[in-house]
Image 1 (tube, rainbow, N blue to C red):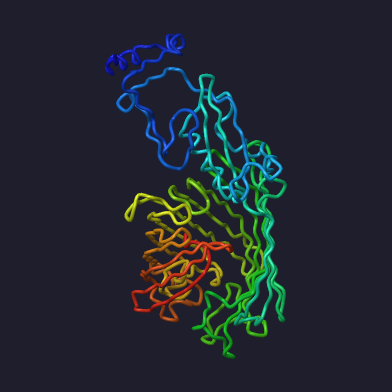
Image 2: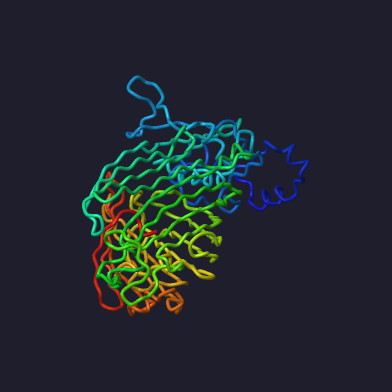
Length: 502
């Protein structure tokens, strides 16, 4: 015979702290109508698979089994799987992972001997899924009378990777490119990313090494070191801005950075020292000071600006995974203070904020594609400069990563800006997804405060709206994005690139 629920509730409320220990094994249940807590098709006991779906908190209204004993974690196991999802190889040996297991365990909130919490397990899963070195992470827990075992099955991404490419640039002509990337050096998720580009005119490169902060070593700071040498047609001084000799403006950047990294609970922080030399040049790479309208191209007036800055970046990543998140958010704030050293004596401050929210929806069905999940994605950005800054660093509004339907920088070149984007993403096939999007950006009238007024002089509107359709195709080379954008001025642009817009 079932015990009435109100009696169970009264007993639970009257048991004091010391009496609960004596009743640790007390359990009331109905033999004729026992409910079980269902989680993503599994059960809350004996071998659950834990995915990123929300688990309802069991109450006396939802279950008829009340257990006063607390579930203690006995063990946490890390297992690696191959590309076929197998745990063992052809010889029956366990798949060996590259990532150190102690490093993985140090990232987890749940530890052996602690009370098991399903919500914390989900948080730990999301933290592991955001690691760049992991392609897929699944979590299970097994429970018996003596406690809970947690099992993680991890598929690692293939590192290191080497890629080759080439093309034809309007600036340097034919070029070849080689890139190297490893995001799991020493099995500790340290990262090295290097790209070298060679042409008949020069050699360009970009390289960064990041040794991340490790929660298991709280007294050790993470760090990053970077260097670059780049040259390209200027984004700020675009094809509408010519030099006196009819050339387009070329922009060269050379510099480096060092930073220390630290995490505080769910926040990541980086403090850096950075140097960049910005030079404006003609086709023959001679330094130039003004454009054809005699507007200055640099803050120093020489065609070259030196930018020494101290930067602070803080971010909070609550996405359920790094690749194709299905829900969650990421928030980033940054400030960069220039120190008046070198050409230009620049002392401005750059402030920037970026917020992205992913909201799962089921407008076309109840199923979720793992490669192209159905969702509404929202991106909000704000940025401003305080003080004088190089015009080449002005915020460029418009383009594939801003307002689609406009060309790059065709909305404006501003001191201050705001940007809002929304996308409805939906699956078409397993490896093909679709997008409906809308973008809006404004310079809040600040383009006229940029040195030389490159946007105002070229009659750029300063604010713009774009909308359209897009496709997302998963390929062996990563996500390929194609967007057909229509601007509020009637321009239609079809452009292709890689990676999501945000």
